Length: 109
Ligand SMILES: [Cu+2]
Image (tube, rainbow, N blue to C red; front, top):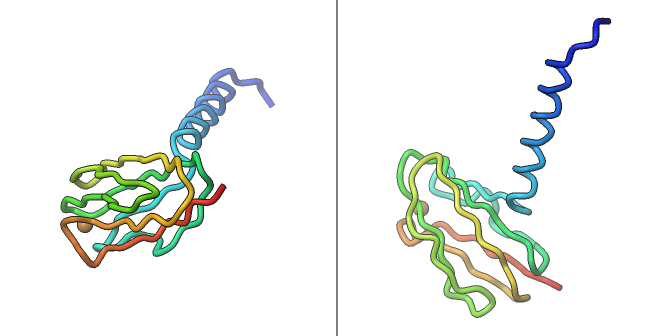
């Protein structure tokens, strides 16, 4: 087999891209068909969740929980935003646009 620098380069690029994605967030939750792709999620303090909107309309992500109060705002199809959970506790996450969308994140030490 002939040694190919192009193949090595492509493999290195693919691996680098994979690592960049892996480092970007510890968990991914999709917003699809007006639902979060998980109803419950257990994570560790310091970990992040990346929320991806896969629906052809806007979604929002927010929480009023003591363990993490945040509002990622509204964003359209194809966009994603992430949030880091820095305290242990239960975080109730919702979408302001679709009140039926709910996700409970249990953050533990
Ligand atoms: Cu929504």
